[in-house]
Length: 368
Ligand code: IPM
Ligand code: MG
Image (cartoon, rainbow, N blue to C red; front, side, top):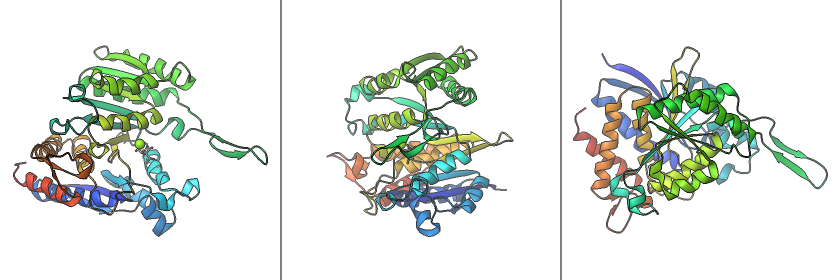
């Protein structure tokens, strides 16, 4: 009998729509060619949901996706909704899913495919064979800290403020996830903070050190975020796993994406656990909705397709399927096919849907 899995697909806005079409091609193929039965249903989030329901995430959508086995999200946001009040903006929909499902651990791997080595703005020697994992805390820190807001001080002056706050349990759980991930890889963990200036990250450092006592086999180091951003472009291969706060992780992961050649190549997984200890997860590309190129058929669907791959590994313990997806992506790149963002002179430029079709064609040659 086939094993049934329900998957929420939330295309969102901008290029999120286009790359989701390509993700569906891959999901359909897996549904038809494995013993897994993938029951995929689509829902609205972000601007798409605002247009229909006047809210970036409808309560019914939240309830429905909470019950699914995994969530795949394209991207949210765009100029059309930028002027809306803060709570109604597309990004609030995404942040609400992360918070409501308590998806506190965000995995953002940055892997350099050999064939893309010339797409990066860095020298090949700096990035060759790079395989780095950024683990970003996703449900705390300055993104969610209270108090926050914009207040009027007097007629002329207003004050905008946010709070960077972390508690012991919040730091402990992300540190534990990071140590465990490092243990499975190169056994090196670098914790990035700003402990010389910010008390919340002084506590972060203290708790990471104490959590590390249970992981004596993992080599722990610490770095201030300003130095870490510099080291990421100077010598990224010194890192194996980086663990950091919500906002520092947001910034450093965009930076790391360019080591790989394009933001269009980076998948991510956001993971948490419900009260019974069952894993909950959402998978999404690290890039945004790219309104400037949306609707043109030029977006790179590979970060989205690799996010589908991550889902099979992290949610369904099917490392074989995620390995296959990575292998197929690698082989297409080796053959010289590129979307616009990663193209160079000697390569064949393909559209979003052509890239999806190539992945599908290559998958058809594989045994699962
Ligand atoms: C990301 C994005 C989001 C974030 C935005 C869209 C809210 O930049 O996933 O990195 O800041 O977390
Ligand atoms: Mg970001």
